Amino acid sequence: METLEKVLTPEEQFQARIDADVRIEPKDWMPDAYRKTLIRQISQHAHSELVGMLPEGNWITRAPSLKRKSILLAKVQDEAGHGLYLYSAAETLGTTRDQMLADLHSGKAKYSSIFNYPTLSWADMGCVGWLVDGAAILNQVPLCRTSYGPYARAMVRVCKEESFHQRQGFEVMQTLCEGAPVQKEMAQEALNRWWWPTLMMFGPKDADSPNTAQSMNWRIKRFTNDELRQKFVDMMVPQAEFLGLTVPDPAVKWNEERQAYDFGEVNWDEFWAVVKGNGLCNHERLQARVQAHEDGAWVREAANAHAAKRAAREAVAA
Amino acid sequence: MNQSEWPLWEVFIRSKQGLDHKHVGSLHAADATMAVQNARDVYTRRLEGVSIWVVESKHIHASNPDDSEAFFDPAADKVYRHPTFYEVPDSIKHM
Ligand SMILES: [Fe+2]
Ligand SMILES: [Fe+2]
Image (cartoon, rainbow over all chains, first blue to last red; front, top):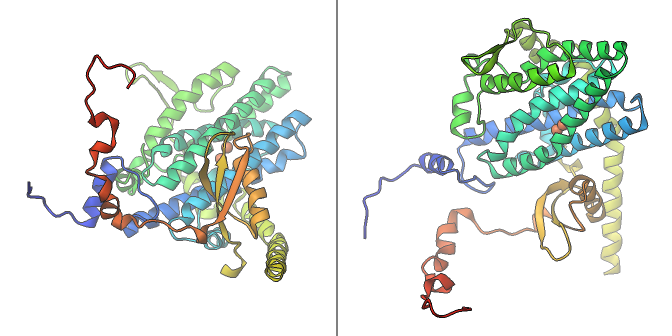
């Protein structure tokens, strides 16, 4: 039987698939803007994993015990893996690893601003795991259901590994809080330093985030920035209380009516300043990244030469 | 700049004896030996596998998603290939 069907444009067919929660795979047709937005989003995410190794790498040689050192090494190694999963996902959209790294190193591409803050004491390792990885998890769990298949699969892998990161951070904080008064003080100071920058990780206020609506339509973003920020505060305030620490925001107060915590306004001037490159460590982080890449050039070349030599020898033998 | 980029490899992992190798992702490596070692380091850090296959991505041939409707069409109208197509009397057991 013939039915009268309106002929859908490729864009409409694409959106219909997304609305029906059908995943988009690399070789499927997709609008240019979807492809471009995803390349930017996924590569930024990958860059954040990569640069994110630096503030923690800073403490590997100074971890207070062999156990903590092993844990920190394992975590930093995981972050390298997360970078790899995400770069691979971005590559399926037609960009190259070299291009993405070139954009990171030239400063054209962004990474999460949180990594432009310094890690001054061992307690900062606790806060990075507990708060920063905690915020990352809130961002990442919904992305396991994102519309682009390779991205969603990468996120499933990332999320599986991420929860150990947050737990080890919480354990560092808990150990400090149960220790000597000076250790607890160290924990409180670290929380004071990291609380607000972590709230900034969720991005600008919804009103200042003009691309949110399109991204939600494409299901490459599943909650708004403000929704995630609120979730984070609701999750973290009781955990800080458990530790006997005080969140550095006098406006934090349980709101019975909203069944959520009220909290103060983020310093948006600071947020934009760090995004624009004027944070405490922007320069240092990028320099360390470029240096590592340049120092590794001979290794990459040598491996290529070795592979070519071996291939030639095998060709002769065959 | 692109000549320096190592070739791309697809990674397949058997999570335990008796199961198929399953695609888990990809990575860059200069040669197959390095691809297997890198795959171990990235994809089996928590004992996720007992065996690894790597295949250079350029060697994978795939069906075309634009043709998938016509391509898979021959299977679409053959419900009799499924056991549920047949009605078995209630009194018949073990079928
Ligand atoms: Fe990560
Ligand atoms: Fe992490």
